[in-house]
Length: 81
Image 1 (tube, rainbow, N blue to C red):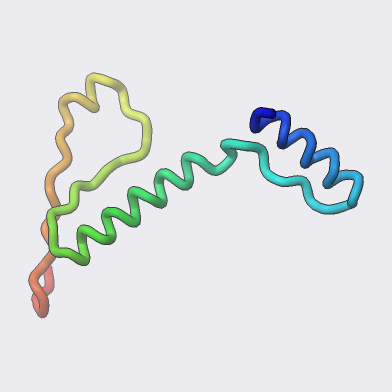
Image 2: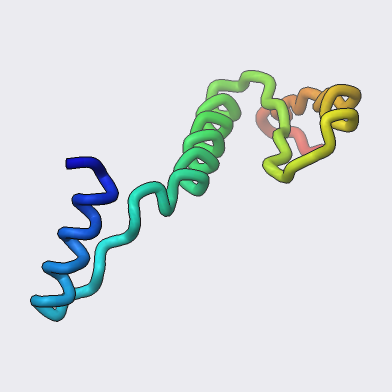
């Protein structure tokens, strides 16, 4: 049984029992990937390493090839930018 068939079976059972239907497979994949990237960036900042800013918006291929993100440095403790 694949994920789609399992979801259909779970949806049918949920409707029969009057409980909420589970989300479809793959519904939150993009959000999960973005949260993982944000967590890894957060860990880099805590470690004092250089963090590169990423844009998750789709860009044309020509703009993506020419635009190189600038590194962001974490300020030293006790100093403001």
